Length: 261
Image 1: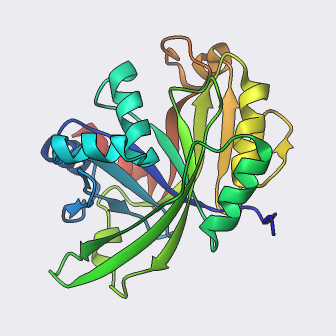
Image 2: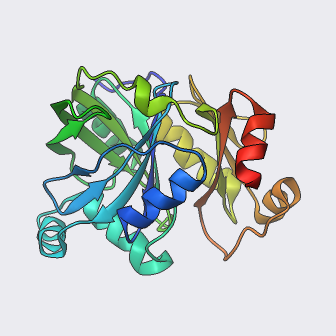
């Protein structure tokens, strides 16, 4: 059976050379960063959890030898991370992750649509909250990508065993961030890449190359439209590259004061 329901946004993957540097950077922006989590395939993360249930996943290489072995064994997560780093460097925004209750069904749909990036991946890792309480988290991932979209990838994440841990303390960010409202991608061919995102998310494209998820909007913009909206250069030409995240916050004035210091 091929699933058809729209996936919600689950989290964003942010490659970094060093979790220590990423932790300092995010802390300076007013985010609380969770303790380091180690994957069994040579990567590690230090997540920023938000009250709406989404999160940021800064991702670093913890064991080069293990990561190389994982790539050789067909681990799509590590392989796509390596592809991103080799082309764009160790700091960035490589992937959008959707939530799913059935990663196998998501994978079957990706295969049927011709956008599967490879085999599913199942793994478990320890999770520790701000108070030191630990539990085991288990996941299954299904991957999607466009043939030419080498600067970005997407995947669906099934939380098979979600830790019963209170994250309230990890969500009390000094900048007032409570959730993710919108993710913006830049593309030289926005309509084409909006089709890929639509297929991966299980939701049709709306007007203006937007894909409306249950809990966020994904916008795919041409470089000139991005520059006009944000007053920033879109950077080098790309079939698709994730470029911006818009957060919901409790108090804009308080956030402005924090960021001005």
